[in-house]
Length: 469
Image (tube, rainbow, N blue to C red):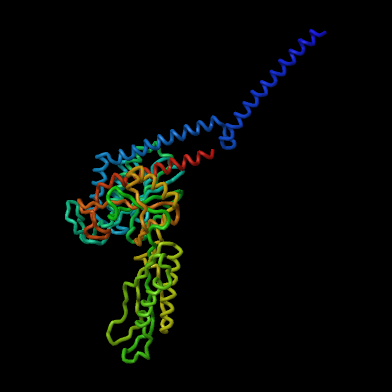
């Protein structure tokens, strides 16, 4: 009896030890699992997290390689020479707004040779090309094509062959660089995770081309847009932009003040529109100086006054014309309304009537250029990868205006200044100068930025979409 109890007691002790050890082992497993799941998002497995991390590393590596490859292609001597040749052909044959038929033809010929599909005509002379998958996401790149009514004074081999017309704002270079980007992206088409839309736009200088292109559907399905402009303010190799308000909105006004004509010797029998126009001009100057916050930069300038045909005759009417500019849409719209109120008020005080017009076809209203913060940051990072962080600057706001603003009113996007100041080649003059000169060394930089912005935007957008699967 006692032996049986002894054996049974030993078995019980062994069993107790086994239970304790098993419990400790199971507790350890439970703690390990709890620790693993605490590190992972809800609903994700540890193995899938490792796979995602590996994929991210592969994506980063692939992205870096593609950026390097794009820059390499942009700097290929054959590509650089090709861009220069195209730019010089466009420069020799400048065409004004909505007259860019030969320029458009040259662009289409190059697209045909590359096997890139396009739509033409768009907004009379514009070209819209596409390459990539043909499906979402869509990113657009824009370049303008029109010249200016300026006589070129630069003596060089490829001087304008058309009297009174000149590419004095860099649009020839913009078109050449966008074609360069098209050539690069075509070679990498199999890696495009979406669709690139190439917009060759007419009539930027008239402020109407972008608006007309949009009306013909160039932004259909487009998720983001990017554009650039060569500037002499920054040295070649330096780029600059800013998030939010960047370039001013620009508008023009024309006011016809109507009175009652008569002999200047008996003014009491007349209603003098000259007097009403004069006081309106003075009162308009008080808007900015006395009604606007000094930190909210705005401009109102009267540049033309017409009235009368004889020194001793009070005319029936007088006209006043000018321009106004502001950086925010709110300030721009408020300034426009205030100009109208002031002119109408001064006309009424002097017993006149008036007609105030802000919708002239020669000088249409252009809204402020406002960069989307997210797209700006994407472009900034791309620019740093291409030219280095020390060559990427935060630009101040500029009173100049750009009809790229019409695109930014419709879709998120960003506009960039591409520096090209180089004293050695004479690239030091302001836009619209008859001595305006382009430093062609900037072409591979511009083409690279165009191409990498589009390629990486599509890759990032696709990756972000897939991360939610």
